[in-house]
Figure 1 (cartoon, rainbow over the protein chains, first blue to last red):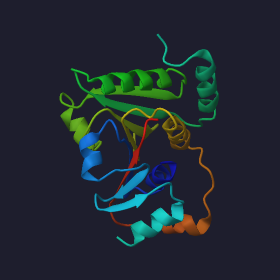
Figure 2: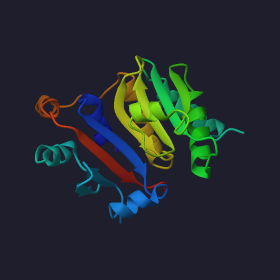
Figure 3: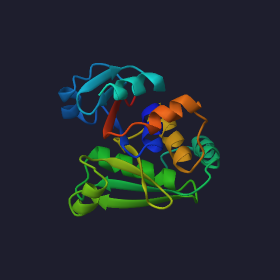
Figure 4: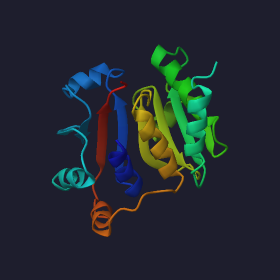
Length: 63
Length: 143
């Protein structure tokens, strides 16, 4: 979570939400959340697990 | 009745003592609070009470609709982290940042206050180069 938040802090184009899965069931179902953490990028790309910043950046750069 | 016992309060206070600038927190709930909104409000009120550098404003997602739109809040409970000038840091917490996530929450407050770990220059450059809108949603668990 901290990685996503740090990215948001460093660049105004990025915003990052922590979403508590069991509180927000419709959203969890929508994105097929089976295990956490799950990072959803722009409502389309999904990355499973805790990721180093480079991996999240790579996925963002590929958008 | 306090949410945190003395030991935990003391630890959290210690962590918050590392804040540099002030941080403004905005919390969205609604008049007829569901359990989760109620619990999260108590949580954020208690945390805000642990430091003079934390300020909390509570809004109603229905009555304060324009604020919700301004901060891009689309569900509740929502905690929005602003810097001391009320600029949006881009960091939000939907739901109670409890369990392990309390560490993420504390870290975000420290970082928003201006205390950040160094990031290698090549990575900083890549972050700065992102020029499209990016919305990250990290689904986490309370346990």
